[in-house]
Amino acid sequence: MKNLKTIGLIGAATLMMQMGVAHADMDAEDILEMKKISEGLGLISLEEAQKNALLAKPGIVEDADLEDRSFDKGWDYEFEILDADGNEWEVLVDAKTGEVRDTKKDWF
Image (tube, rainbow, N blue to C red; front, side, top):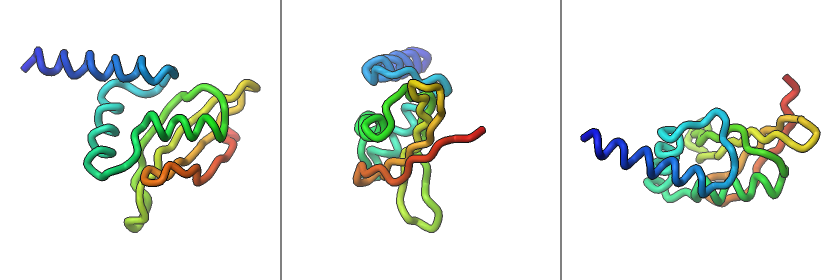
């Protein structure tokens, strides 16, 4: 059992390295959980959503979450992105279509 957990963590770490962006607040378990949910629901991958978020707001991804919208209205990937000027932005990407739904500056 310990070997399976080790293999899973190595796989998650490899996935994080392949993404090419630092995720300061994310760990391997978060990424694996998002992947499991997205595959089970037929959603786009974290990598594809991240690509779309960075096209909308270039910078460094500090955090990412997969959020269930209220009242069964779907799912969003939520990215916290630090831009070149040091501003932090929240970018929402529709997890089904990949469309950027919202981009807003975090003020605090």
